[in-house]
Amino acid sequence: MTTTARKATTAPANRRGAFGSAGLYAATALCALLFLVPFYLIVRNALSTDAEITGEEWQFFPSDIQWGNISELFSDDLVPFGTALWNSWVVGVAHTLGTLLVCSLAGYGLARIPYRHANKIFYLVLGTLMVPAAVTFVPSFVLVSSLGWVSSYQGLIVPGLFSGFTCFLFRQYFLGFPKELEEAARVDGLSYWGAYWRIVVPNSKNFFAAIAVITFISGWNAFLWPLVIGQDQEAWTVQVALSSYMTNQTVNFHLIFMATAISILPLVFVFLFLQRWLVQGVAQTGIKG
View (cartoon, rainbow, N blue to C red):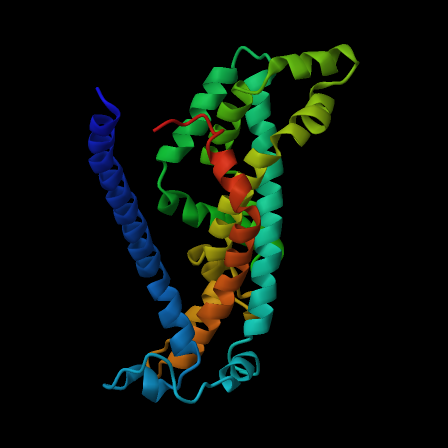
């Protein structure tokens, strides 16, 4: 084939490739735009008045930005939003750290410590995933109430520290972790705990970060359990505080949207800070497809 013929053949292919790339970028931009629409609505309504939010005439952005909605939100005597924000931080961080410690130790024990009943225990852990949360909700509340943990951090954090699914993910990950590193540590005199803490954890930061992001988001967004346990306003979390702006008598739209905008900022920061570890960690879970 001559050089002229090759150029004539490759030119349409290059054009098709260029059109394909342009179509891919256009589709990606459209999806990104649709993804950002809810965030735009939250910010727009958070800086508007109730009349502008519910008015018939739509404005892309309020003509008079209501920055005072922020101070009104935190100075509201009926809803202690600042306290709720702090409680969510404490619960989210403690829930994340506790879950990582408890579930990683359980997963490591099931994957590495030789025990003839290890598989049976693992199947029992998997069996907990088939039990609906509604079945254990009332017994958990009765237990927490009997311990005097209602409207306390212990009641909000401790019952959710163990997750069968998170334990399963850690076990799958540790099964694929190089045994040679642990065997070398054992030769140097380290115990199972020493090998876990000094060898496994430092070399599994990506996976731990991925589980931390998922766990923190789950703990931050929890609503039903904090609603039941946090019977005192001082124990409210962000999600419970958000629900209090909607009553049978009134709905404070501007406060709802402002509280929502502020409450999602920690999630955005956590995701942006840990996103590169999140992708790498999910790829190491051992779950394919």
